[in-house]
Length: 303
Length: 115
Image 1 (cartoon, rainbow over the protein chains, first blue to last red):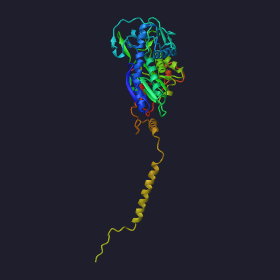
Image 2: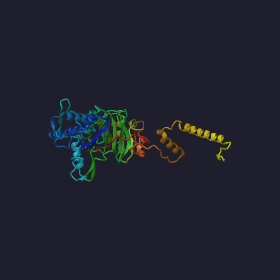
Image 3: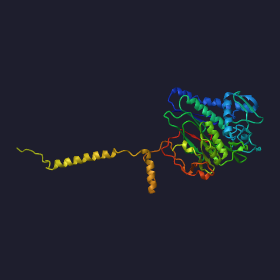
Image 4: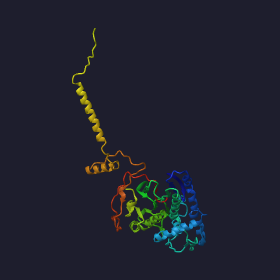
């Protein structure tokens, strides 16, 4: 088993390859460079990234293959979540105060609050085959967790051609295949109220697990708590009883989309939403600290 | 000429006593082996058995000699509430507790909100 730790996309990354080969070790060491390349395309925090350029220019523009793939995932996420995961939330995020790297955000800021409005659900803004994007005037994109999930899946897929691989992108986990001995990858689910403790132990054979929460990326604006998960129906940070939602899915990007959807929907609607989708299983932690899980959760955890 | 003789001559019944002691020793050794070569109690179930006995007798569980794997932390069971078999109508439909085995493997990583 070989692994590499590094920082990318504002998060701590981990890539593990279930192999002893020196040639594979050399390939594993390329992983930080892959993430650097993707971040340079997808980050809204880098003024010279492709995404920042696209947001500045607006209108119809040609885009790279990497950005087209990530935007196609964002489009799928929008469809799968019934519009609750929407990449066009950048204006709402900045209005809530998330206008720079999280590490650089002040603990509290005092500024005029613009009236929030629902984020428009658009169709047809991406022509994937022609690699062309059309942004309506005033709309701007943020790939956020979808970009990270997409990158984790992509890295796990690349490494998985060499040996079974796991990629952890800041808590969003992608797994290419069972380990060499045929066993699943054990992945702890952190307790958002006591992050050093684990709530449960998920067993991943392949696919992904992701957690969306408002326990960490949050800040104050004019004295009121804000967080980074925007509900497109209101244009404001989601106001539900869920503190964090963890989902296991056939891919990391699907898990990321589903976790965010459950958090925005709230515990009861969110768990029902999961139960209606056989490929998904989830666990939520509520504001009061209680823990609930979907019907299929027990099929994916250590017993 | 005086001939010296060994004054520690064995008594007449000594060989019989020696034989009896030897036989008893052999029997004890063989019996001991028979006891220890009986099928072992499955180690993985030892903890469960102790907990079950303790529950039946209403006594606190005594620790087993089997240490949990490195890095294992006992999950907080008291907050755990698995879902009901049907789509829930309210939070009360999610009642119930689940115990995670102390023999769980060590996690390789952790899923959490973005760090």
